[in-house]
Length: 349
Image 1 (cartoon, helix red, strand yellow):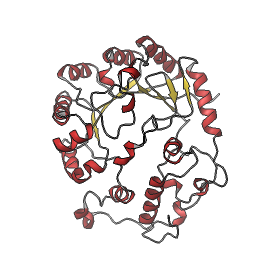
Image 2 (cartoon, one colour):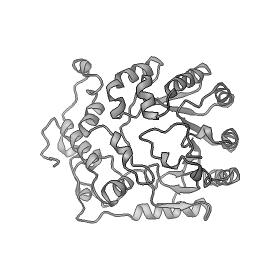
Image 3 (cartoon, helix red, strand yellow):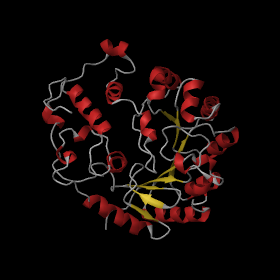
């Protein structure tokens, strides 16, 4: 039997009060989809199975988890079962009442998304006027109660020009600024979310520190020149999943379907039809036995260690779990070029 998971991400609802242009769950933020969501009692049953399996770390997310009509009860039940609970939120839903509730039994971490540093950019991304103001109010309430806050930012076309302002805002609160650039297709296969990605060259510049702060380059530690032998070599195996999928974590959506990560939609199994242990065994089996065909470019790619592609993205963007995704190829080869200071003989075309 495969070791059971120790971490769970529970998307308790896909409901949300905003409609971010890059959000992968927003197509399911509709009344019709809400009716499909698990009943409160079903959520508790799954909590019990997760506890029996030995899950310790529990992330409650959505959508916007806080807008679930029984969020407070769900949160309390997760805490009562001994899970170490973290919460993802957009911050605009953190009213005084909600902040007081969370402060009464704080989460391990409260992660809030910051999309911009101005009304125009923030509200353009959320598509809801006034959301930046409500976000700021939520942050003030969180800080006033000493809740364990982390602010995260999705770097994208719309906020590219004010990333420095976002950085200053976050660091001004005494927090770290760690932007993320991964934007995935929506769960229904809609690719419009990917239109908001930064270009590969912009992502490389951001990750190497020059995109945000070119003026500080002269004061930064010098990057070492890496030998191509360090990472410019094809994988020694043919596994399709080259990440942590199928090791110690599960993601459960609002309908009770369990999968291996946020981005991966297959394999997936319905916890309304089988136990968690049975679903986990099937999940691990399929992931560990999925293989690249010998002739597929990704199978022998020399920069695979620098690549952020996953099979689910490839299905939607390239038509096959095995196919290369042009965007991630560009990023990976760009990183290789920077790490080798242009000495690499590997060229992406």
